[in-house]
Length: 284
Image: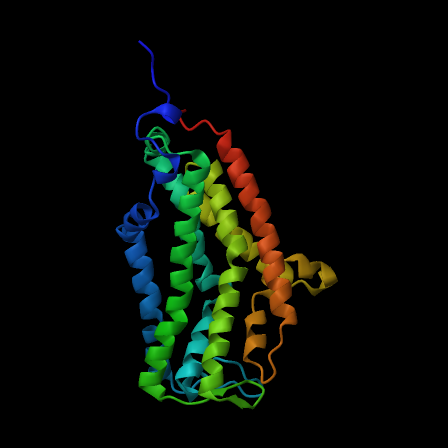
């Protein structure tokens, strides 16, 4: 009696395995998704409470977005983006992209997904796509809630800049959206790094922690001015370039360099992930 292979099994279509909506629903139901969403949604309220208790932030001789947080709703949203850049938003990106494959391996369910059979490349593509979708939602959530909370607390108005000028709200909102888009693209390198680590380890904490650790190290190295122009090869060097979108005259230079560097690193890391996982023994 002949045995039908997966490629010739009746009704089998590789393109129909692991639908995107199924993976999205699975991730939505996970406790870590609910907890992370709740924490980030509550963060603007925590910052608002801190301002209400401590008063208007003030730092003589230096003006940043934090000092201008109480000027208007758009200012409060910009402040939340400023606070999230560098670390706060790195954690959910590393979590959503680093936990996705490693968690399946730790639960011993990865072998059953591949036995469905789901092509390995399709499995990774689905996992990474969903990880990016949740990461994008997280990055948008923080300044969006900040805009709502800030507008309710401080009113609607122009976006005051640390340079002393202001942007009309009608101009500030598209600029803030551009800034958020830059942050998302700049986090691609972290997403790809966490995802690659997720394919080489069965420990989700190792993949997530490894990506966060590398982020911290690159941030520290970027502060070492003795490295000179070598710092421009560090993704952390460009992470605050989104502020160029909020200048009276839109500046593209830093954002384009930051995005090109992040995308380049991400392509290499994703290639390593797909190449390594194609040869990985998921049974042992």
